[in-house]
Image 1 (cartoon, rainbow, N blue to C red):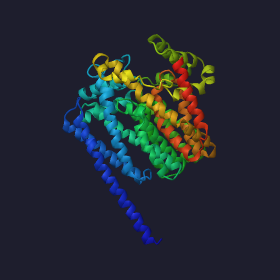
Image 2 (image 1 turned 90 degrees about the horizontal axis):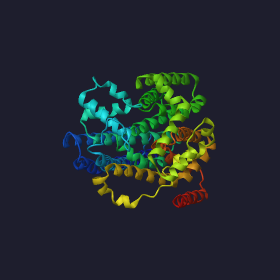
Image 3 (image 1 turned 30 degrees about the vertical axis):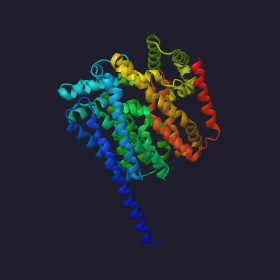
Length: 498
């Protein structure tokens, strides 16, 4: 084919892609801009809500344009369609699973309430800062455990646009898009062909993560920054782009991540330390190490009035074990299913030896929670509208179970392919990169947060999807999937009998 013919072919493909993208943007705008018109709860005005929705959608378009220029996205149209679906899903979660059962008495609380979440306190603090101003309320940023980042984020949204939980949900959806794009970018950097990783866009719709994206929680910020850090680390390791720019952006991402969740920033560095040590030149390694240490120390001082106590709380293994045991004791006293308490009695770590010996089993249980309780109570599901009248908190707690169950089912379906991806790790450091960034956080979180850490699994769910795709491409699941599915089915039967 001649040079002119190649140029024409490329131009036609480009024009076609732009046309499809423009059509998808306009088509997605119709349902998206209808969302604020359907919103029934607090807002400054419908005009402001429409403007915020349009702004978020426009920012998503701009973000996809940048992703295409960076070589992350090959076709933008499928991404913007899934993002429009994400906004609709977030709207539904916020409206029916968050605000409906909590308004008016429990949406925002000044103290933790049994059955509620830390997000209810974060939202309360953010509203106070937005209404009264930051000058006299700086102390509210440190009101609870590592609340600086999330409270600052929420109060910034409320201060700029007015108080409406809908705005938080919309911006959280944008953070989800940024996080999944970053993960796709990391995979593209590790494995050049872009098309096969475009299916990752559907990870924005994972049920458990989507639930928290519809709430004023830490998770949307944490996930976006974690995967952004993974992206810049991957670029450093494969020498893509200017090293100084990648190091600078990584330091910024680490600083922001540490402000939201310092422990996740440490996990990100720990999971990639060996790769950085082996593949970076000494000068770049020294620069990155210095920048990383200074960033974490500065954020440690900034995020806590008492940095020494915070460091002790995070890194003192004895205190972590005592805290886990205390949480299990509280779970026993408050009551739970017989099976959960029996598993907790066996697997709750009580000593370092116990922690190490049962570590794999504990992580296996944690990754698939709430398995084996995967079948929803259909009677309660049908009664949910009536529950809003007589048991609003019961409705809220039941609603949190449904997304967890759906995501657990998806993780079980993908598990054979995840194992195939992990088995393919011996074929090169790029495969080990994905494995390390899954297993190190899973081992630490799954063991040290075993009793109360189910929701932290959603940090790794997009990565599990990515490794499953890697396994489909480079590994073999063979008959293993039939064996694993049979084992999970047998577990469901055994649990029902128990």
